[in-house]
Image (cartoon, rainbow, N blue to C red; front, side, top):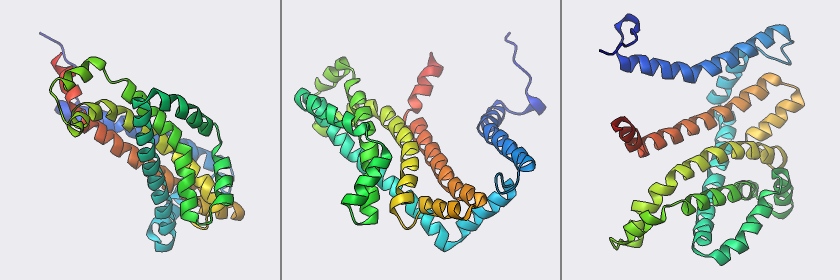
Length: 269
């Protein structure tokens, strides 16, 4: 007879587990909010504005058509830049995985690009490119392309040779081989690459908009800095933070559902 811990108020185990997971997700943010609110009580409001003022400004931005357009512009720039870097990086990674010569030729170039700071790409793009949207797109692609390429290349090289030969024995088409073997093998690394590059892209786009744009969250942050408005700066920053958190949760959901067979296999052991 196995002993089990009593459940509070006779709650079903699923509800208890869900409540625990929810608490683990929410608790860090509650602690962070409490620390900020304590700082707001101890320091002047122009340094640490109270949370209610920040949230009021946050919702004012969301409900303002003009201001929320700036938010959407930044979010579009992030997603477009990441998608471009992912597609180009995926093609380059497949070429490098297929050809050792191309690997030796392209790897140093990508490493060189990886060492160029984001601010340098901003300066280069402002000098080279006139259009704002194309300028920011190029900046986003060039700052995230090396990471995408190396992460996808590493995933391709990690595919089991025995598995590859076994799949080839069934004589699949190229698309069938990619769908059945390659994609499931590299998808975890692809999702990880998106999670990592999403955070990097959110920082780069702000720098790009600070210097080379006339709209967007970065541009609005520059306006708040000139007005010395900490409440507005936090409210605009939270727009970007919540977007990143939302996309991170979406990627985690995709990962959970795409690889739910792993949980089933672990329970069967």
